[in-house]
Amino acid sequence: MYTQILNVLNSFKATGLVAFLIAVIPATYKLVKPLIEAKIKTEKNTHIKQGMELGLKLANAFVPVVASMPALSNSDRKKVVNQFVDSGLKESGFNFKAETIEGLAEQAYQYYKHTLKGDNHKAPVTPAPTNDVTPDVQSMTIRKYLTNPNHLNKSRK
Image (cartoon, rainbow, N blue to C red; front, side, top):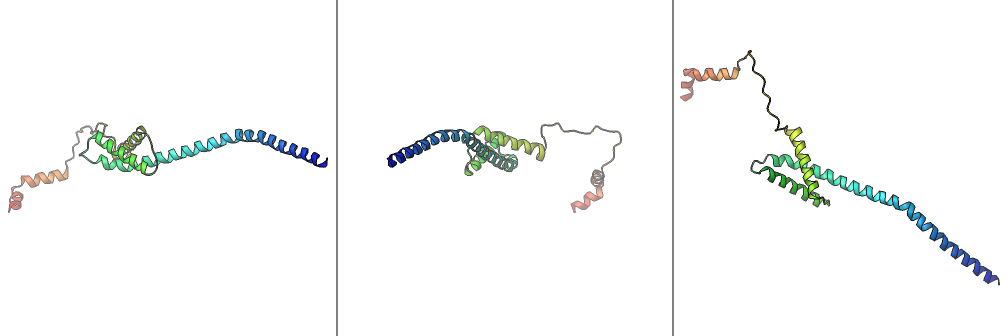
């Protein structure tokens, strides 16, 4: 009889353990799932941010080189920069859409144009003419040298 009572108590313990696990596992899952999803999202955002920074650095380094190549047309320059940035990112393990890479290249070109080279779309500003004209010393010296026949004869000998 004593063993039967112990068997019943052990079965209650086992049943209680199963019931406890049945109650705790879903509750824990509901509490932990949002935390895990937030962590995964943060990791993805950090990875994307690192890729974008690397792409922009690559584009900023390569745009001035390509901008000074007169043999390439504007569309060819854009293609070359996009290919360079794309290959550099793929070597580092990042895979972005073509639109994203084009945006990085455009951002680098705008930075180059406005801060390093200046905006070439603005009209050149020329000062208004004034009545006070000061003669340029260098042009006066050249004019004097060319109009003086003795200087011309000496330079030909």
